Amino acid sequence: MSESTDGPKLKIEEAKGKVIGAIAETMDLYGVTPAAANLYATMYFKDQMTLDEMRTELGMSKPSMSTSVRKLQDIDMVKKTFTRGSRKHTYAAEKNFFRSFMSFYCQMWEREVKMNLDAIEEAQEDFINVIKDAASTPDIVAEAKQFYDQLEESKAYYHWLNDLVDSIRNGEIFEFLPKDKKE
Amino acid sequence: MSESTDGPKLKIEEAKGKVIGAIAETMDLYGVTPAAANLYATMYFKDQMTLDEMRTELGMSKPSMSTSVRKLQDIDMVKKTFTRGSRKHTYAAEKNFFRSFMSFYCQMWEREVKMNLDAIEEAQEDFINVIKDAASTPDIVAEAKQFYDQLEESKAYYHWLNDLVDSIRNGEIFEFLPKDKKE
DNA sequence: AAGTTTGTTAAATAAATTTTTAATAAAGTT
DNA sequence: AACTTTATTAAAAATTTATTTAACAAACTT
Image 1 (cartoon, protein in one colour):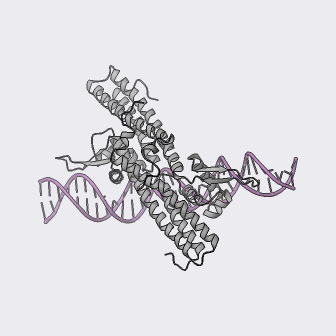
Image 2 (cartoon, chains in turn purple, yellow, blue, orange; image 1 turned 180 degrees about the vertical axis):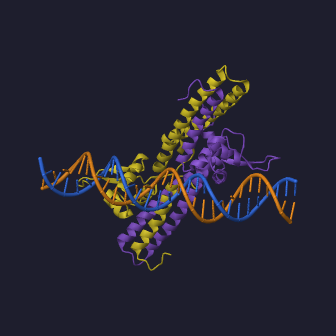
Image 3 (cartoon, rainbow over the protein chains, first blue to last red; image 1 turned 45 degrees about the vertical axis):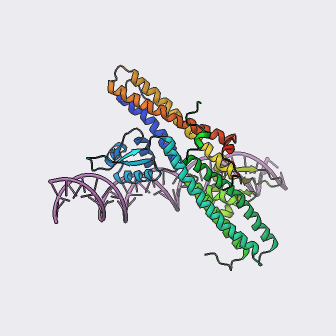
């Protein structure tokens, strides 16, 4: 595909392209939209960019860039930068994957824990009411008890996930798994 | 919404429904299709199910159940079970979230690491060629060097992610973060 | 071995999501 | 204060993805 007849400038672009494609595909897999994924991967090789530079570089519409940048900001993978003199907004990608990807997971996991734990609490209350209900037959009571216990057991996972998020946020996990460990 | 006039049987279904909704929504967020997500969440409260039971329970087509079950098997969240006497295939959901969700993440992360590390290796070779190329001007060489170093630095993250997967797979992470830790 | 039941693959439809065009708002400049 | 530039919001179009209908293959029964 890429020939040795390519100029060095072009070879650099091709090399970057391979990494951009891989990063974007990964993000796609995690539910980030194609435009946002491509944008982050592109910005990974840039110091900072304006919306118009993004549009030119990716060949997409400005609103698409605008919403994509915002989504990336929401998950802390892009930060707004101040550039004196230019009235165009400038943005920079978080280049440290430890920071960018971890903030992504922590946010996802926290949402997961909250959502599921809330639902579990509600459901457990319901099951208790069924157990206390005089209209419940013995086998219905038994069923409710069983489901209650199943949910109770599952809570351990969500508490553990919360602990994982905490240890990532405060950096303790890197004492257990060092960042610079040899292969 | 749910009234105390509901029969106990109905209240149980409502309670399960809340948890099913939360689990399915979580899976949705991670890129699992709605049908597969709802199916797993439904199976979480069942001992085992046949394809026809799934279709009836979810009100969806059989091929949809078939492909959904396969996807769930791929990520080890559903196992085929043997039921003597019945010629219908039976399947059971992995009820232990530590196992089901962790196998999901490990698989995703391994794919991510391989894909990105492969791309990085290729790109780094390209950058070396540019650096060695007589046709490259000094500033192009400098640019190639800079990108090469950026990629080199990023490898630490992928190695770390691999270590994380290993420690989850061999259980060592649970010495650092116990499953049963109090709140 | 023919027939029946179950499961899977392929093509078509339907639904949902992403992106764009167009319009509006906000900010800055002269 | 009017004008210009930039960014955002809303509605429309287009793409993609998920699901279903229909056809096929496999496995089991009689």
